[in-house]
Length: 495
Image 1 (cartoon, one colour):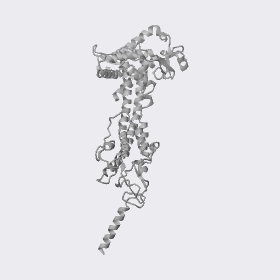
Image 2: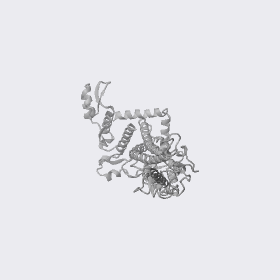
Image 3: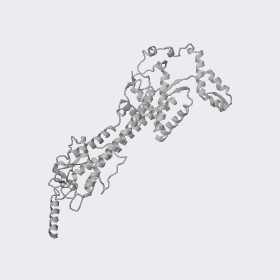
Image 4: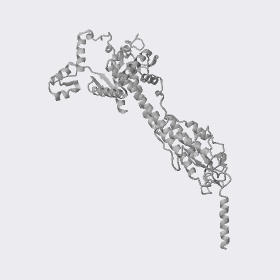
């Protein structure tokens, strides 16, 4: 009786073994399929570095434009730009463009992080799948075969996924500036409809089916198809020869994980303003490695700080060529990049100190010229040798002169006051400016702007409608020139 039971058990086990697999999927996958997957994974691992490089390039480009603006301000402080008609427009444009690109970089930073995460996520799916198949390499049965149907060994063809058993290549922050993701995706899509199964007589539980169910240890109520890598690879009741890769080269991009990665990567690109006509001009101005020659550049008054209008403004090619030559000569004479950077920092430090000494009363984002008065000079003088009292009057333009040991109106304010006194007894005493234009008499914008009629394109405007008042255009130029320095200084501190 015991013998009969034993024979029955053996028969049952034998039958189970015979029906464990169907004739559909039970073979190893050819290594060529994993090679295509791992090359895709390797390409995805480049994307974080590519995205980071794009962001780094954008920040470097912004800094390059800030350097143009600061260098031109330094030249202006040395009275080296009086013959350069393009100096003020280019300095303003460079500072404005630098600010614009820096704002774009803040947006790009989030997109860069998203692209890196999405690419790494998909790469991880591919690597883990490859690792599971590679771990199932027994002495006879195996899950990865050579294209000649033998057991696959080694990691050369799996290098994008595995460098050794259970060892995946690292994702680094440094790498090539570009990747060939599209080509690698199409190579995986090209696996659709071709033979990917080994014909050798081995068994692979990872690709097997059992009574119409995938063979992962159960039978009843299991799905007929198992998806791997988010559906890029799948196994079901169909023969492995042509059914493991359902996506084609034309629609593999619609796979959820692939779509998420490719869309995130596409979004992490440099903005259009980094390669527009303004950028091209500024890049050429910044390139002081050789002599540059320019043609006329058409922009607007608004973009170069001449006014708030979008009226066309032409910067002559000859003026740009002269400006670039001046900038090149200045930079060449500084003794190398470290000394050039030090000079910029020293200038910005000096300018920062001068911000406490300017003769302007400033509200947030707006500045209005304030002329010193005789009463303020008298108040400074009244403090005499009292340093503390003089310090309390700094807001009115007073400073303690260590040589005379007494409180005085600041030198630059005293100079302005002397000019006013001279104007009060000279040509401008009757409220008419020396140039014959009294901008302040106009109370309407239309009348103010009529003063500029008949001027040639590129000429400095005589009057400008500024803060609901008609003012001399030099106010606008000085204000915008100052703001561009502030912008350059502030951004230099940030980066």
